[in-house]
Length: 135
Image 1 (cartoon, rainbow, N blue to C red):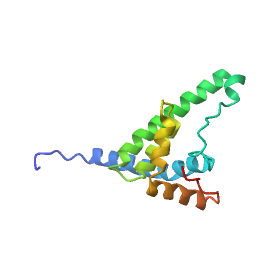
Image 2 (cartoon, helix red, strand yellow):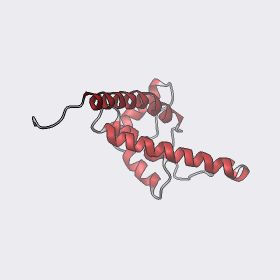
Image 3 (tube, rainbow, N blue to C red):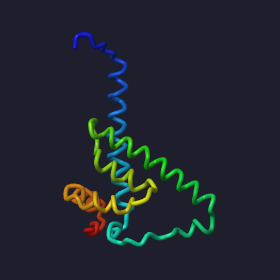
């Protein structure tokens, strides 16, 4: 272990990245959870947004941005499993934003985990919203 180089700049960068991810997760994750309808995990019918027919370019641009944000949150959530932050919750929100086959079934299964479901409802209660319906 004495042979490992110690670089204070690298340590500073990692500390700043950890702090930024912690603060971002503390703001972004609750905001996204409060935007979900209470029956999100119960209602299996996925609705086609009106903007898809009316403004296809805007729809696909927003879809691209949503998938990019979801990918960033997924990567950040995985990193938060070893760094400070709400890793599992961030992964759940990231997966919720990314479009892939079988997404809803995976999200429903994750949301059924008691600790995660309790955390989501705690966030919604603090925002004075009705709790999520049990999947």
